[in-house]
Amino acid sequence: MDRADEEYFPPEYKHFPFTEGDLLISRRESGRYAVNKILKVDPIVVRTGESINIQGTRFTAPCDDWLIVVGMALGDAEYSSEEEAREAALGGVWKAKVSHAPIRAPGAAEGQVIVGSAPVTASELEGYKVWREAFDKGEAGIF
Image (tube, rainbow, N blue to C red):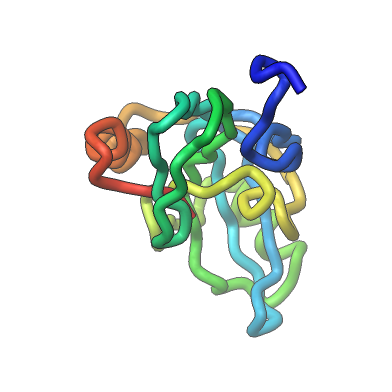
């Protein structure tokens, strides 16, 4: 195999069905629903010999490759139905419990249902900016 054709990250790490600003709802283990928002969708290049921290484990790339990291604002599981969560999302009354979580594409998409979209504000990106600066220095990872 030609090294240019090699891939290190699985194909599901390179596809994401949602875009920045999408409002999503998910059903949590408790049976309750949460509202989440896509803040950033970043293709991250990892060069040969560079490492990346994924879920607390450091992986060193044997070849140049890339993956998608999704910056999400995560709401609390505070809604008793999908419809209640949808109304909160569309009404703009939900609150983020976690202002920014950097997540691999498959984990960010799992169990999510799109219900609408809203512009991403500068204040919503504050947590992303802090994470990205630390990530670029090798001091932060992804989930």
